[in-house]
Image 1 (cartoon, helix red, strand yellow):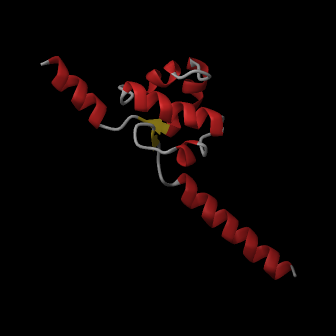
Image 2 (image 1 turned 30 degrees about the vertical axis):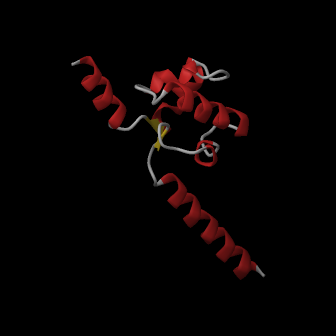
Length: 98
């Protein structure tokens, strides 16, 4: 029985390592199911992020996430290492200013 427990534990650790090795979540591309995996983001906040993005377009910077109802700058700071906006919003904003 202890061999089975050891194997299950090893598998769980391997899976956890894969989950964290994927890098930051692009909040402009992630669906609600992906956003829920972020610490502090539940189903309601994940849906609110997707809805805000659908109405307002992509987040131009990580701090823009605080514009979503229920998410403040404190949460953005807690998530900063785990989220990104990707390269496209910056390029789109620069093109719009020309």
